[in-house]
Image 1 (cartoon, rainbow, N blue to C red):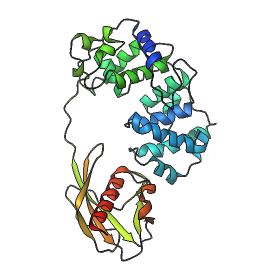
Image 2 (image 1 turned 60 degrees about the vertical axis):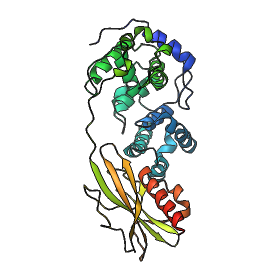
Image 3 (image 1 turned 120 degrees about the horizontal axis):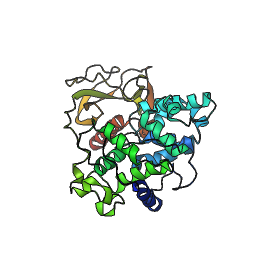
Image 4 (image 1 turned 30 degrees about the vertical axis):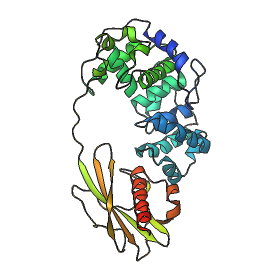
Length: 351
């Protein structure tokens, strides 16, 4: 276990947070009463693998449409999936509505303990700790990427990630206060976002600089140490844009799996080699555009050819969406990029 830092670390950080806390729509002001657990939970689910800048406007759209857990539990699944488009990691959206329904079925109140929260769909160890601390004031050990970076530098933890996470969690526990644990967790997040940044940390502005071992060693950017990443596998596929009377064919992806339940453009299989025009969704005069779309998922890179055709038959296995209104279809990012590229190509050729 890393040696303890001075006992006033939390005091110094909370004093800094009282002056510098970010104004975020899901937060209470420092020291105020705990915020609405629904808003804390919703923000934490949205913020998984997504930036605050992206989440802020989307969060406000969500709470305007579904202001509480009861209204979200009543939401249509397809409407929720469409509203989630662009936030990525779409299993979160499926778990979101499942969790809302579970909370309502249990009486409409979120559990106040980490154990109870972890029993909810889509709520893992980090999210349960964050909700318990921020929404209910419980002393919980909250470690996201920002917190991990701050703590790795404070204690100069030399073991590379992800193996260092146990030591980082133990070190975080040693400086987490019994009171204002939620403010402390958010202060650590804000410090990592604004001061203890991945590159060029602003150590002269850091309230913890006097206690930071990495800063004392003059090498804060060396922490946290990371193992070299393996190259992501490359996959290939084809997106099919089938037009008919000013409309384009959209389908629903299977409810389970990548982008599950989302409205999308049809694709063939994603494979190790480019499939060309294999597996089209219907009969059409298909041709491939010169443009391609690339997208990086968590575990692989995807390169997509773009096939365009005038449909020669009707399809009952999807919906014909007005091309002029394609932005309202709620397509996931990869398909939205493909639609934009195809429409640009059509404008360039005057079609």
